[in-house]
Image (tube, rainbow, N blue to C red; front, side, top):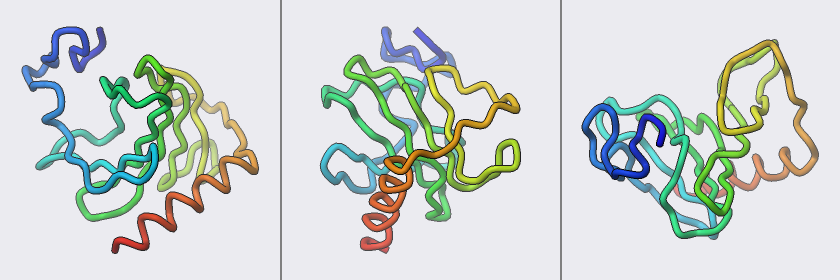
Length: 128
C-alpha cells in the first residue's frame, strides 16, 4: 500500500489521498504538481490517476522544477529524473524503479530524457 495509503485513500499521516499536492497545469499526459503548504519534498510513489503512463513534473513552493516522474499504467513510479541537485556528481540524473534509494549509482540521461527535460522546461517557462 505504501506510505500514502493508496488502497485506503488515507496516508499513514492521516492525509486524504489527493490533498498533499495541487495541480498547477496539465499538458498532454504531463501534470505539473506542487505541494500544498509545506507539504512533501518529493513526487508521489503512486498515483490513482486513470491516465495511462502519467508523468508528473514536480515544482517546489518557490516555483523551481525539481523532478520529472514517470508512472506505469497501474500508477507505480517507474522512472524519475531529478533536475535540481547532483547525485554521484551528476545533474540532472535518473533513478529507475519504484523505490528511489539514493546510492552512488548513476544512470546516464538518454537523448530521449534530455529531449523530455527540454519539453517540460519549455512548457513550464511558457506559463511563468
